[in-house]
Length: 366
Image (cartoon, rainbow, N blue to C red; front, side, top):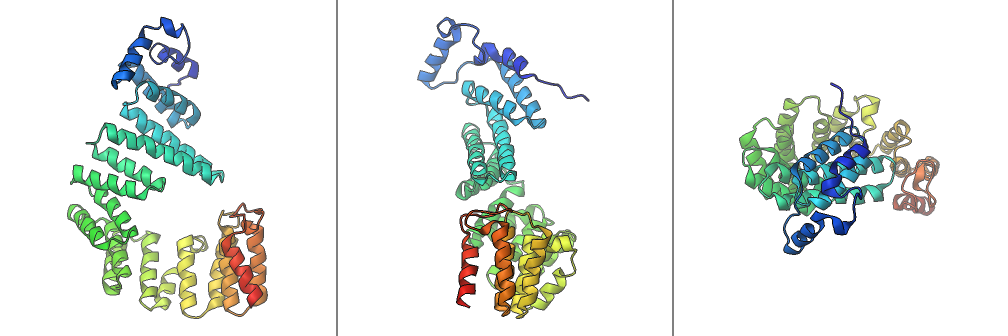
């Protein structure tokens, strides 16, 4: 089916009467201006035509689906200005801003991405104030808060969602992740028990219990839980890596390597997998192989924003192996990749990354 097009001028003209998007008459002549002023002074909602609201929402949604984010944002800004308690407008604006934050992140503008993501969460927060009894809205607000780095706010939203709807296992599952992050393990276990009571086959719940058991030093229990998660989703590499980590921390780095070193080259370049392979080799005292694990990641992803860190880790491992010249070469590679004072071709940390400076100082002191 052909998607309906909403030329901006048509949308604006359609909404002009209710939203004042184009000036057809003087404000003093507008019969709604005095009404809106009175409404503002009394704290009530300005009178807005429902048909115009639906038209605006439909148009914004069309632009959002077509990834024409600037046009969607323009329409939603005006709609929210005139109908600030329209929850769907707040949600749509949050989605538009979230996508804009993703675009900024892909372009390398992390500061702008963080600022826009914070604005996205703010619209969801206000939507929850308007409609506090919606578990789904609270859950979405929690996800937005997590993306914006507002962890305490996210926990509050997930907890409220679980309180409002005790039949959805996703609410306590998300709640548990933050409680684990906060090292509130007893509370996290309670949340995960509620998840498994609703859905005994939720692999993330079993994997989360494995994580808690690992942090508390109960390796046998951790392995039992991660085995359940892997049985439920055999192809999920996250759980394979988690099992390797448990074996390594339980004192069996050889078993950890058996789980990971046979993976395809592209998978071994994944950050979490590289970390575990290098850590297992380090525990075995095989520092050259640990360095090669980091070098492999660098070679597989040389343009990655954090490629300089892989070069630094390779240099550190070579230095531990007593290969100072190899370490110097990887320091040079880290500088080229973007860890130098002025940045670099890779667009990495710039500004003199502390990891790069630490490797420089270690080489000078060797």
